[in-house]
Image (cartoon, rainbow over all chains, first blue to last red; front, side, top):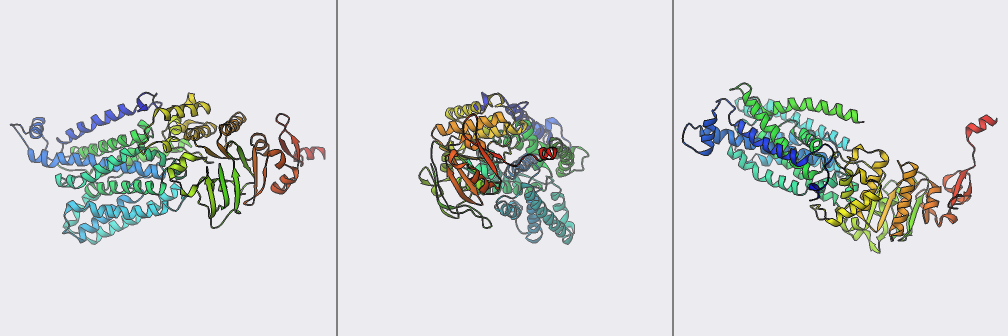
Length: 338
Length: 264
């Protein structure tokens, strides 16, 4: 590739950033194995991981914390990728799966299923989640097909859809108060509590496949980010490619939401930070965003368990706190540029 | 070569008159006419952004409607008026996107692609800014960066919607001279221009539009007359030859109002 030969984008170091994030992620995941209601010694964790003799806590390490860390990384990466796709499609840096209503659609559908079809195994929950996300996404898609709608208007439509669905979520929770509603409530705040290998197995294939597809076709996103007319002028079959990218964005976010709940701001923040770090070419920006999203989510989940064990603070609460500060900074920064 | 045959461009609310017209290859044709006369709509139909409501558009003898999106993008390129670039890409990245119709879906640049991009940047005077973020450029530099993308696309037909917008006089002349040299390479060049004198000076062929219809076309010296300008722009002018090129330049008859007040 030409990238190695040519001078870098001023102040940006793509491969170095990617390598640093790539190194940080396993370190954080490893750190996550120690934190929680039962603090563990390094020897115990290592012995469990390697199956060696000596003090071991296999259940906690291998059945609880390890799949949880993997799931956090996967879901965080998926939400980040979804946000990057949506921001490119809508040419709006403030768009994200949460803001255009996809997360709410998925959450609504998961709750409906959990309350009214309790017989459905949990491993199948990603399916209604994806349908709910698609329902919200379909409306956005429908608006996008109506030609030259202002991306900001589109975001407002998504916001309206999201708020309506959020009201639906509240209504469902109110109508189903009782001992069985506390688990959905924890999940809604964006928590990895109680997640294990079965959850990981139910979402990993689809998330990894879509992530690979997005990375392979990153160049087409570059073209789409130029706007539908310019993209068409460069040979993009805009109706088809935009629909496929939006479909991927919706499924990535909804499936992630079905296992980790509504992790606020990851989908908004990660693509932004990635663009600032490595530039806007999706070939390098998408993997950076995905890694950043994974680091953020694993970090938040670990921190949430480490602050006051045995209490757990939902990862979603921590990402939302970070996200709120980030959002305000973003608005001020955007303002200055104008 | 671009042929229009009874082609009707427009939307449900607004449509142009059926147009039969040929833009010859190796020529620089300029579309002129007052604001809102349908110049951009016509360009959008030629580039297939807008399907003709009836009639046919042919590019290089082939019906535009029958071409795949990629084939179309290898034959015709359009420089639109607005030039908004996504965040975080360099001038060289942007110019490189012009090679997309010549690449696979993966967008992997070949040596030929890189040579085209380098040449396009050089021609647009942007080689020194190749690695600069597009967002950091001035309006004029950005316009040239998008022109570099168009050059990299390397199509036999090129359309320009008000290419001199945002540019200072030096770069206006540069762009108009560029379009002339692109035509001299044998390409079909069509530009919407606002300035009649500039159009007459640089284009080989003028097409004059008013209210969605073509009212005159031909060589600038024949087309630009006081009568035509009066009819199309509803303003009285006198025509004098350009002292450098000898091409017609319209001068409005109405004096400056400030001068009137001073005289009175």
